[in-house]
Image (cartoon, rainbow, N blue to C red):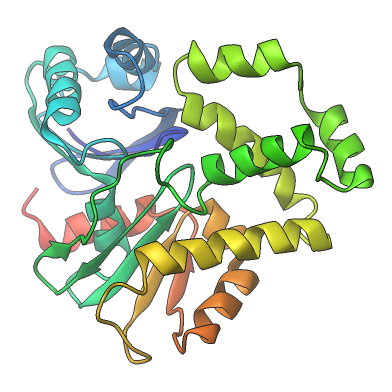
Length: 284
């Protein structure tokens, strides 16, 4: 049995295939970002998924692509956890940016961007990912991501710069007590995922001028720091991965056009494309 996983900060999608490359099942766990989730919690999120544990001794290979797996230390932590659970498996842990590349373009050169709970970008030359700036995560970077917009909404609410009508709906949707917010941000696991839950509020009010303005400013910031520094032009293929990009694709396209760029495709969930890439290009 072989497991292929696309792991974001909010959730991780798993697909199990047999040696004939036929899909056996797929499941979803909570996010497995080793840069922000404690080691014990990472372990628990995997072993609590019955379908995975049921086959743990039958798994011979794991290809895991995850948020927070772009630097050696957290990658080693997650790899060790997987090896201890799936004792007969060969485990490869790579960053989620590589999964985005495989899902979006496969082997063709392109600009590939992630706009989900977190954000990132790279230029893929057909063989290697070129990342001009390493991501420093949800506190310092992650422009236009779910947690970025979650922070913006909370800031606007507390500084009373959110329109009154939107503010009242925001109050009805969430527990906005200061102590509750601070506890989730500073003491609980996955503060980035917690912040991103506020961003889901925007999906229901995507036609509101305040929300559209907030989204546009975030996308402009993402292009400034994460797209325009690359040597690209109107002929460059540009792919976006993730729910933020998907739900606000019209605004995303508009911002791209102001810079003379065209978005090739927006992919909400990359797991099926990732599976197809593995079947076609990697000897499983």
